[in-house]
Length: 324
Image (cartoon, rainbow, N blue to C red; front, top):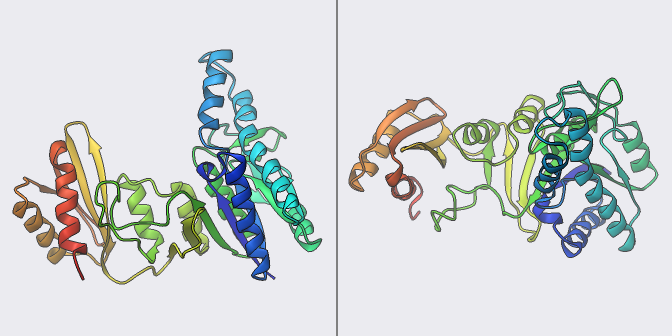
C-alpha cells in the first residue's frame, strides 16, 4: 500500500469531537487502500497555555531543556487521544513520541535541526497493520533529551517522515480549504488555488503570509515531497504544492504591514514589467500612492501607506484575478 502522511493542525484537534472527526479521515484513507501515518499538533491554544505556565512557574529564566520537555507534552496528548479515537472506531493505531518515531536532532532547544530519521518502529507498525500516530514538533538530541522544532514544527515532522518513508504524499489538514489568491477575510472573492509551486509558497511566507512552517516547505522543495493543503472539515480537494505548480504569471497576493507602511506583493512565476505596470495602474486607478519596493521573476512588491493596504490588496486582486 502507498504510504500517506496526514498532518493535523491544532484547530483540528481542539476537542474530542474534532479528534474523532480527524480519526475518521485517517480511517477513510485506509479504506481507500492507503497506509496512513498521522502526525498531530498540540490541541489549539495548548502550546500558548504551556508557555504561560512555564513563565508563571519558572520565570523568564526557565532552562530551555525543561521548557522543551514541557512543550512536547501537548503533541503527546494529541497523539495518544488520536490513537484512542482510531481504535474506538474499529481501527488499529499506535501512538509515538518524536523520539520513538526516530526523529534525531541536534541539541538546539526550542529550534532544533533534524539530523536524521530512523523510522524503523514506524515501518514495523505499518507492516503489522497499525496506523502510526506521531507527536509532531519534537525529536530527541544525541544526549537523549527531548527537543522541539520551533513554532509550526509539526509541519517539519510530517515532511521529514514523508521522506524517510519513501517520499510519501504529505497532506496538511487544517481549518482552511487550501491556499487562496488573497486573504479571504479581506478579499471575499478570493479563489482557492488548485496548484502552486514550492517557490511561490516560500515567497508567500517570506513576504508576510503564514501558510506553513517555512523550514518544512523548503525541506519539501529540496527533497521533492508533494504537499496537499486541505481542510479537516471538508473532503474536497485543496491546494497541491509541487515543483511546477501552476502556469506562469500571477499566482496569489500577500500583505505585510510594517510600522506606518505596508507591502502588498504579487507572487507568481515569470513575472516582469508587464505585471509591474499592471499593478501600478491598478493602484493609481484606486487613487492609491504605491511605489515599487522590489521586483523579481517570482514577486513584485508595492509599498504604500498602511491605511491603504487593504484597498490596494483589493485593487490588485481585481486586476489580476477578476472575473474570468
